[in-house]
Image (cartoon, rainbow, N blue to C red; front, side, top):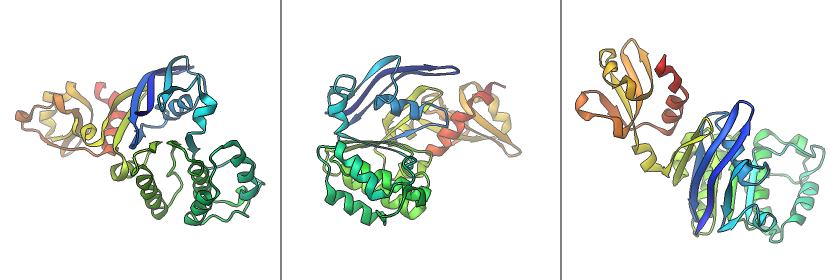
Length: 284
């Protein structure tokens, strides 16, 4: 069964358009959702959760159309958007006692296990929490009501490397049983290289690719050549950087001719994002 099926979501804003966004996440897997700031990640996630109304398209969660079964499906979805920035004067315990009443399958034991793992003091006020602690609290809430799909926007933002590593371990533990699925956006692509099964890449409101992580990376090559060789491939490059040693450029694997004599290597996810962000430069 598909945990998430996003079909041709469109949303128009002045100066920006989410353009027929489509991708699928199978149950029991982790999908990293990547793209530069302003690419459309948060707009897509809010559309999935029906927090904003798309102009077109539809979302299916666990086989049911979100627009028709929103209240039912939100019992099955855990979501977090970075830190908690509301009811700042309330204590963690007070806020949790209100939030848990909305969930049929809230599990106090699970919640307290995550409080302990994240080293959260429930007597602290939200205003007293660091950015990282707010993120951890939001995740503790998202993980404590038996959700089958976790939709997380920048969940590792503000966490130190040790806390991030622990969180990625939790993600991998959660999907082991094959019932829980995770979609999370992040700028920290090394996190995805550690734990993601699939990558969906959005650029300027459009999905560039959505595939198995290894397959996604393998669909690009990073070229290193002499400046005199640039003319051979310039029109096929997504973008490039030129320096005194020559050039480096990103190209789709299908557009790369190994007989050209230009050296190539597999790019990282970060390099793919960076070169897409510079793609307008190639036309200058």
